[in-house]
Image 1 (spheres, rainbow, N blue to C red):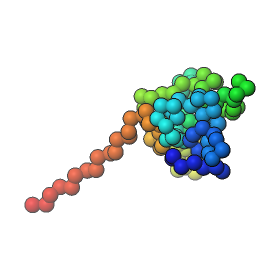
Image 2 (image 1 turned 180 degrees about the vertical axis):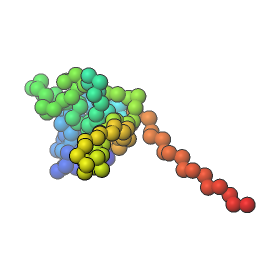
Image 3 (image 1 turned 180 degrees about the horizontal axis):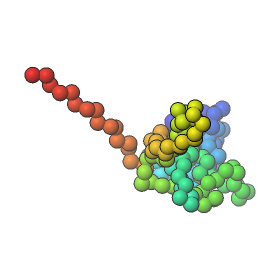
Image 4 (image 1 turned 135 degrees about the vertical axis):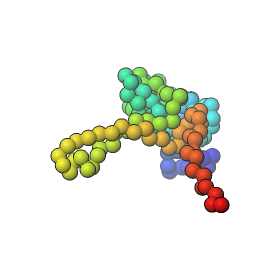
Amino acid sequence: MDVDQPHIRTCGTPSDTNRGCLSAIGGRCEILNRYGRVGPVNLIIEKYGRVDSLPCHAYYTGISKFGRPTTSTSYQQMGYRVLTDRTTIPQNILDAEALKVGKKKNTVVEVEVADLAPFYPKPKKPKAPKAEAVA
């Protein structure tokens, strides 16, 4: 992450040797300010009870030297808040077998979000069942 990328947008402040992230302009990226160049990472956001995930550069927005936002997609300015108490999001799964008979059935399952920001707890790996010893 600490290697400058002159042609690819990566985590970091834009400079002559690093194309950087538009959200870091003006010091507006809280992840870059607190943890250094660890991104891009995903965040879990919520508004009106709806939970979703998105990349950090879609949530944080840099401010140019003229005082204007550097991007038009700022979920932070739209009123979304970052959830830090979970590492999963609900996802609708469509039942293919029910579709074949003409019924539409959705199932909601909790899905682990990959590449989360450093302030999220590390996901716990499921314990493998122990093999029984044969006597």
